[in-house]
Length: 70
Image 1 (tube, rainbow, N blue to C red):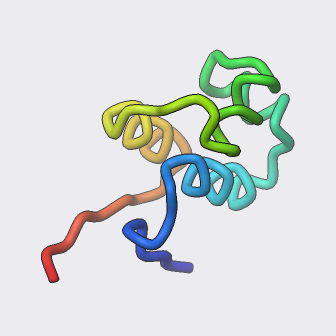
Image 2: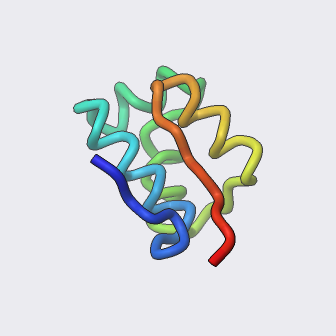
Image 3: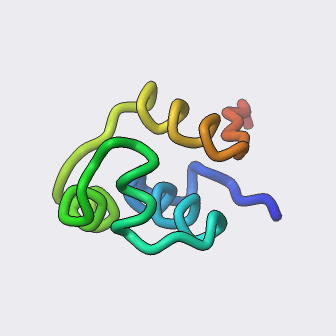
């Protein structure tokens, strides 16, 4: 499956990655050393996440995020 990252917020991208890995927020949080509450706040865009961290998380879960020029 492929998504265009430009159409989503960073929090929505994290949620998509988590759903693709079939983990709940607590389980997903453990894979990136964060708690369930932190994941919930990131997914709702209450907490920000850097592009570098987003890319690290994607790589850890074997997901590729690409940036393209229109």
